[in-house]
Image (cartoon, rainbow, N blue to C red; front, side):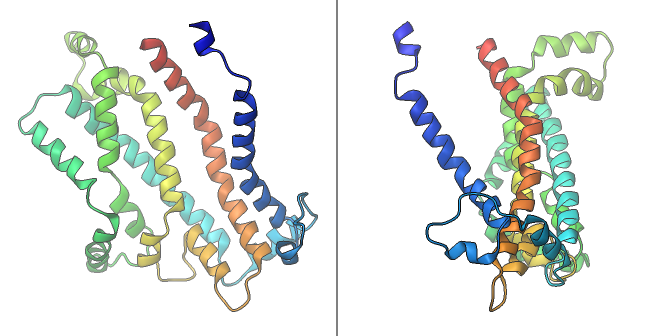
Length: 277
């Protein structure tokens, strides 16, 4: 049994190679971002950072076509709002579907699961017409409101709550006089924290990287998200690849920061589940 669970001779070399292959594209992105555009055509390509990062960042934020600072602010507002809403509503609905008894519970859950089977592209035209009727085109609510809750988040929280939250603990809280919302806040939410951290990370990454829906409803070039700003950098007859890579590197930093912040909670949740198992 000890031999089965011990690492072999090739384990660490294989893991090291996998880590290098995963990290190298990100490293190369920062290398090109710190050099001039001709670095893309050099043979062999440069593997060390240059000294043009500050100048490239200055040119990026001064670019009149990209509106990159506005894109960063808008994407931050959208991603934070959607992530907070998805985690809140998903944990509430997951708790209700897992532990509360009400008529039509299973039918409603099946409807929510069925929404996950509908391709996102099929909803673009109906949602666009709805945003037009609400006069939300070219405004951030058109990007935020349709994503406030997701079927995946509700189903994920329901499955986790069914196992992580003890029914006896909820009944004991009711005996002590707690109402449903207090039970959710003091009993259920702390138990769902690891899964909520994973859901928040996935939601933030998906929302931050979303391009199709913002591209459909935000037609004002002066009010983009960060992905639309990156697209503006790539338009035109001549593409300044140093600016493109600089913008991509800056747009990647919030994702890395969120992963670092939530990484411990994710690993802690995995280890907690392993100990419970």
